[in-house]
Amino acid sequence: MRRNLTVLVAVVVAVGVVTAGVVAANPGSPAATAAPQNAQNATTIDVSASGSASAEPDTAVVSVAVVAHADSADAARAAVAANASTLRDALADAGVASDDVETTTYRVTERTTRTTDGTTTSDGYEAVHGFAVTVEDPDRAGVVLDAAVAGGANRVNGVRFTLSEETRADLRTQAIESAMSDARVQASAAANAENLTVTGLRSASVGGGYGVPVAYASAGDSAGGSARTVVDGAPVSVTVTVQATYTAN
Image 1 (tube, helix red, strand yellow):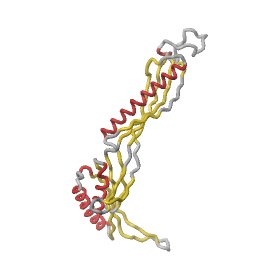
Image 2 (cartoon, rainbow, N blue to C red):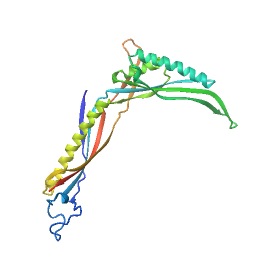
Image 3 (spheres, one colour):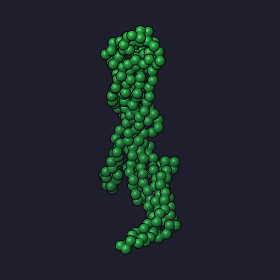
Image 4 (cartoon, helix red, strand yellow):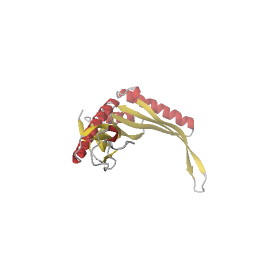
């Protein structure tokens, strides 16, 4: 799996004296004329930095649905149930485990139309059964999508690429380490500019989310000449931000 590491750093530095209720040894001296030696009076440097790590997606999620229309709610339900069963069989034949097929939507609703005189009339019933199909090999997303459609899915909601929990955790660790490393470098640079030395980390907080790329689908020709769906993904990035406070003297 290819992994690219990118570090984005934005630094905001504030240098000052935190008295924490302690009176300085020389009250007549300006507060920032010297670096205090007392830990409670330490000069602090606040740094904001961000880091990101990326990898090729190792999981794809195919979203499809079976939709049926009928004159009665029960007929619509029965039709969508039969088609959903056929869809599950087709996915199983394509090598998709039953645990990787999850129901995301199920509803049966009446369809209505409004006439020119403003009255509303019934136009039958619609049943929808939506599924999220997890594909552990992203290169097979198009194959699974075609199998779903051939098996009865008549609505395709899209394909998204993501990361497994293990890969996501690994990338987040890398991103945190990179962000903290650069936060320390920036804090040291700020301290040096004031003839100070960073002595330790007082506090740090980490936040961030996960970027998911857009999936693009295009039609191509298989070896047999029949049209097949090709879904192209892009690297997935994990980005974190850190807010760190360092002490210096």
